[in-house]
View (cartoon, rainbow, N blue to C red):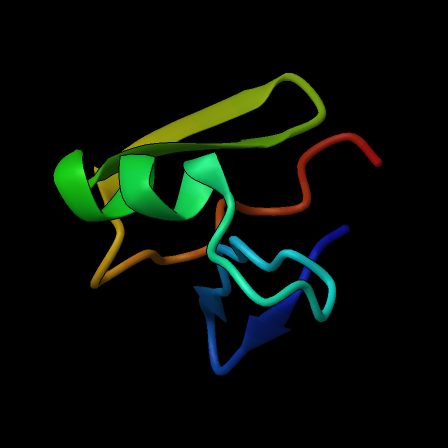
Length: 58
């Protein structure tokens, strides 16, 4: 799912209402570098400042 606001993407680590954080939440906290993919486009950035890659060939 692509969530974008003013050129920035949201990286979600939601357990969907569960009482504990999922493993991916702890992984994002420990490793701030994230890889965003939009089709063939790959963009590596920091989780705190994640500009969305262009929509490319959608």
